Amino acid sequence: MVLNKIFVIVDPTTDEQPAFERALLSAKMTGTRLHLYACAPGPSRDSGEASALELKARELLDAFLLRCQDAGVEAVDELEQGANWSQSAVRAAARCSASMIFKNSFEHRDVQREMRPTSDFTLLRLASCPVLLVKDRRDWGHRRVLAAVNTGSTDNAHIKLTNQIISFAQNFTDAYGSDAHFVTAYNNSNRPPEVQELAGICGAPTEHVHVIKGSAAPVISALADEIEVDLIIIGTVGRSGIKGRVVGNTAEKILDHTEADVLVVT
Image 1 (cartoon, rainbow, N blue to C red):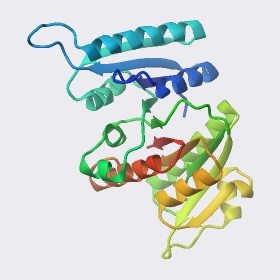
Image 2 (image 1 turned 180 degrees about the vertical axis):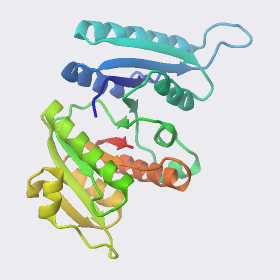
Image 3 (image 1 turned 45 degrees about the vertical axis):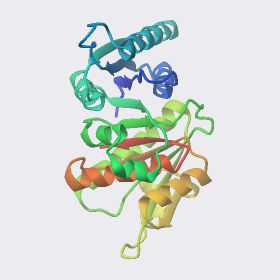
């Protein structure tokens, strides 16, 4: 997949903006354009003045546009008002034909995720393009990617998705000089794939291919920490109904139990 435009969600509630930092680095390395987006509540009904969050968002967007200009990165900004910013962001990303969404994320306790849907979950369920959830501002020091693949399915949608995930991993390898690893989780009812065969499909050396028994989320999280990856790539063929709920839960479980960023591909 070719990245033409990265849609960056700027969070006016915090000074830490790891998604922007990651996007700026990506744009400098790949020549991708940036669309900087923020959504804040509207003016106060009593005073008619802009909200504090709107002013903060404007301040951040102006500062980020200057940094993009200094870095030679093409960027535009968009600030809108809305009560449900995550849904507004999904619509805005679709309007501007974004290739990928970059969003700040942070760790939640499992009970917090269960009590109510998070903005992460909303984006994963509704966005029409891949979503990168960025954990912090650390450098991708190990330049190591872990892609979760399912090569045992004969369903065309799953085969296409697996090929997309492999392509993303290879693209990151080319763009960032990354070291790509691939993992398949299987259970008792599945025949585990042959490592040599999987390595051939992924175009990777056998030592970079991991076939592990267990459920997807804990297998992926544990391996990511063990080999110290910077980015985990997972995929879904459905984001609505039960399938949407499952992918949201899986991605959030991985996100909350690893230090790595998580990219969800459709």
